[in-house]
Length: 305
Image 1 (cartoon, helix red, strand yellow):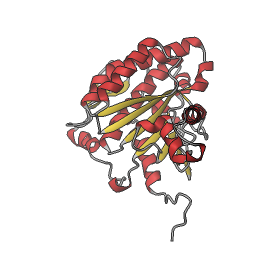
Image 2 (cartoon, one colour):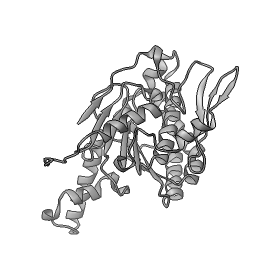
Image 3 (cartoon, helix red, strand yellow):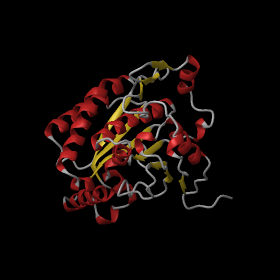
């Protein structure tokens, strides 16, 4: 089942907690800690700073009243689409959109940890994105590396485990070293697992799983008759998590496709398509997607009696 949200006129765009640019010199920011205190949100401008009241902060600590804790998805996947279009609409450069996209991700990671979601998988860079201009690719990897470095300690402190999936053969060596450090340093964290798909595609994942299984058959480890769905699941890159199948996929920017993301794993995933561009997708958009998920009946091919 899928859901499509009706667009909101841009002149009445909601102001989401965490990060929503109001003008060139005014944007939202937030404190990354989400374990022992509320989210601290401010509108930062050249003229003044306005902090949230204690009541508003308390609202961020608990699960929103619209959501039922027993119906929360264990695994949410997100295609974070629309950074470039967001920047163009704002009269900015593409890399400004990517920076805003990072801020949007920080907020969703924080909310996911607060609200009891156990796995969050985000599509950061597709194998299909290699055709983009080299200058943009280099910027994206530089931004990814800087963001990992700057957020590593905060995520580790807040009990977030970080896993990176995808074809790492083309990634910069400095980024590979940092990925190894971050994965090792957070491997025992249990509050939330953040899986970042970089150099990833669903087709690539199935292909590398098939190659792995074929090699095991060739080496005499298994017989062809032993190949089943469970064995393929073990070879997919999402074998890094206890919950490899997303319950909910969210895609922003109004596009109605899965774009080669988690093709095997999405077999029975609920789909939600939001009209907002990724930097504009925040708390209220996340709540709306989760509410939609909680209103659905998941039958997995069966029939409800």
